[in-house]
Image (cartoon, rainbow, N blue to C red; front, side, top):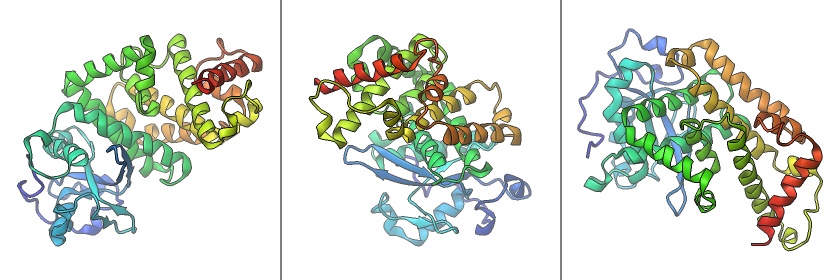
Length: 346
């Protein structure tokens, strides 16, 4: 396995230049491998809850941190470092930056993805495999969307750039490994043709990102209608978990406005993920994504969703492209009632 200490050392670069600076400041330096710190929590089922920190950090500087604390290799996940701004991190992921940087950083990227999932133990089964990509990058993207909406990561150009950089990594890796695309097509196809596949889909937000990369896309009204119904069932299920009194009664007791308000952040997250992946995959060149106009456009989309998707059901439905199938309040209420009946009877 490609381990952190067997790469060629790069000439030392002052730490102060490696964090939170424009890439233009690196143009006169020897070619470092740049990336982002990640603070990752893991569940007992090894599900990732990653937070990207939008401060550039070179691989060399990251390894210097590891060399100063060798206990990191014994307890890689739990030993954390601090960025100059005081944020904790325990992993590192290369950025895309540009085509030249991506080519130079591929092995670092493969290694980082493997370490995020499996740690640093040098077993053959821990070596990078393409199927690891969909287990690492979509969770980073979903959590970044959430953090941009909540303000945990500032919705500024640095935060949006980090978000776009991870998206471009996913685009490039899907292009590099055709089996990733095949896996996406299989999963998305099964979701829309098999009810049990929908039930087995653990994270709907991660699925949305995969759907954006599939041949189905996210523009077909009938496809999105299936997604809407599944989403409503999951929201009802979560509401019943919070309030057992909702289970077993004949009719959903709340108003449409109260339902939308209760699920406001989740509704925003669904729309932000949908519109972000649609915007990203709709651009033909990475340069369109990373120029200032591109970053500002995506920043504006996320900010609009944060400020306008609230208890108004119509804004939510229009964002999903479902206005023709859900034309009025009565139909929307019917969708919620049907979801409630299905979930409460199980």
